[in-house]
Image 1 (cartoon, rainbow, N blue to C red):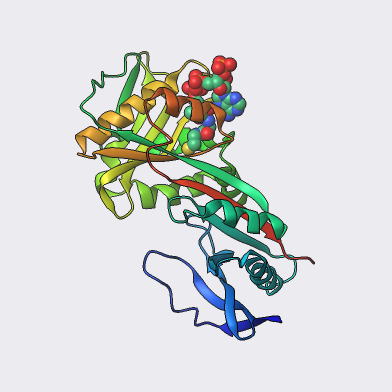
Image 2: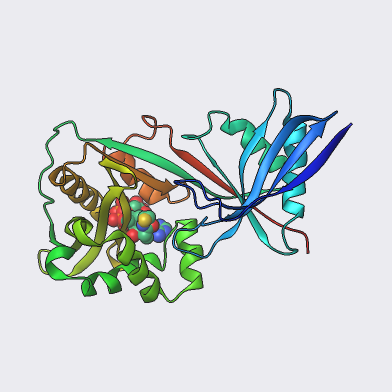
Length: 291
Ligand SMILES: CC(C)(COP(=O)(O)OP(=O)(O)OC[C@H]1O[C@@H](n2cnc3c(N)ncnc32)[C@H](O)[C@@H]1OP(=O)(O)O)[C@@H](O)C(=O)NCCC(=O)NCCS
């Protein structure tokens, strides 16, 4: 006979590298033996945003998929009515990601966003200077020119997280907060503003060090202005970002792209970045607790 036990947790017990503030652990037991468990808490699902309800640390014993579903269902039911609850699954963290996704889907979660991780390795390949763009680093020209261009590029983004977050804020305010975190100090030299050789604004690209990995960079944000799209400028921006990565001594660049962002997915492949080298692939599931 299985039953679900709710164990209250201390929200101040945040693990290093995690933003999850635990609220409770839901444990499914059969005849007193643990079959599955999941932690329910609040986490920064969207970067620099207030915490959301989230599930993490889903575990189950061999053959315990049904118990896993019971733990997840009980955890979702503990959320306030009408609240959104998120369940992230990452292939770089969980080799059993297919089973985790099955649990999420069987419990009524929908896929909110799927992202691919593209790995570009610096093998000493030639990286010619972009031919038809003039590039200026933020460390030289300051932030002001970037704010307007980034805001205008992102109002029509195909990235599901960026569009959700932007809808909650005024674009300029969001861009400023984002740059405070991703373009400070050394990072400002690898945020590049792009214009044509006749000084017509084109877009931007921002490269930063990947959190916790000094040898690896990441393209945090990239954009081409709506009126400049469809001319392949994105290829030159990526080239400029890889040149900046080499200048900063990064051995590789891992960039994360929404799989629905077709122009960006295609540009990443053209740039020589590979989706199959590194197992990073993320599925973000969401459900709403019945009102
Ligand atoms: C993704 C992006 C950088 C591509 O730039 P680009 O220089 O226009 O790329 P390309 O020249 O290769 O254009 C690719 C195709 O996608 C189309 N396209 C570009 N952006 C599009 C969009 N937001 N929605 C629909 N179609 C788009 C272009 O018209 C072009 O079509 P074509 O091949 O029929 O000519 C640009 O669309 C953009 O800035 N998007 C918003 C910001 C964003 O998503 N950034 C990436 C995540 S941080």
